[in-house]
Image (cartoon, rainbow over all chains, first blue to last red):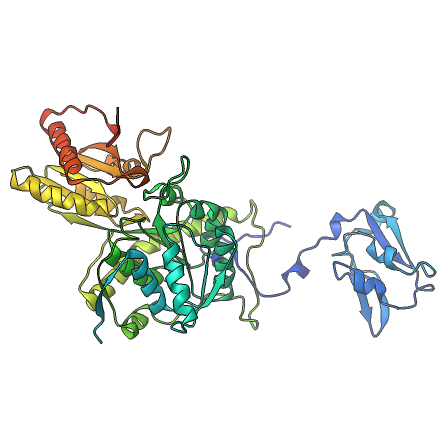
Length: 108
Length: 395
């Protein structure tokens, strides 16, 4: 969908972007080649993956793992790496496995 | 208005006094000759509790300008000072300051750029920065250095401008020579400069804002076009601030000042300290019946092209003095723009260019006389021996 871009008279000066949290509007999930997949049966909700995720893409609600924000997850695999070895609730699966679903949606 | 005082000050001391009176929120600087004394004196004011400014000592000029940019984006009123290689090291950040539309004011004490190494005054530093998006004011003496600094924030912070300003003056000739300087009273200076209302300050946490985001093919052109508009707005702001300042001090400034130019046949255009020398020479030659006139350019950015064309069009010959060269071009930077400004004038003089005063070499009265006689010969014979030449160079 072609967005109507603002002209030079309408833009804030100096490329300043008013408003906060603008990174939420910018989808970076399309960079991903591997997607984290959570096995809920194994997950102990320890939140280690939540602590280590550099993109704040692990979603927790009421102390429960809700899955991943796939609009912003870049597929770095740190969550799977940091998930304790005896639990291994997260596996990285090639994005092509999900090609019919689209890349950028939240899971869970 | 309370009376100020008259003092014997160097150009750098006068600039430091202006900074004390302005009392910016932040001054970040790294000292370099010949601008060192500006921040040296100012840091003494800070240490003595005479000014509440947050003084940031950095490890390079690149960092100094970076700190200025951060402080200005946070919402502070910010100043610094530099020269020569220091300005060159700021290069990258000069564009950031103007591109982010931050109204920083800098004392630029003009000095040659290496090599060979030279610490004395010429314009190769600021002329090289002419396309960086900074407004450039050139002062002829310590008084003008002081006056320009007080007017600079009114220009820079104007909502129609929002661009940084360089207040340039010649290294050593002005920066280190003691002159009679009329200072405003502290409260009068403070009132003239006024309180600062920042635009989109980052420290206003109720209204978050992002600065310095990536800006690619989709918006970059629009932001550069906005900077052009800021420069256009500066023309009016420069004159308005000059008018306000004239009411306060009786000293009036424009884009340029002329000396016996109206009925002149031959003219000379220069910037900064050499303008005073040329005025003396013009007065002498007038006594000998030579109709000479002078123009001292105060504002180089934004370049007052139309005004210059109107003021200079009637001359037979105009000599443009450049205190910096543009190697590989045919003439210095001032020459190119002045001649281009005159190209569309209904009537235009022959324009010749002389490079002088490189690395701090003095322009003497005798050299000024020879120069104007040479220009007069061109006017009389219609023959230009060389359109672009070096003065004061040994064969």
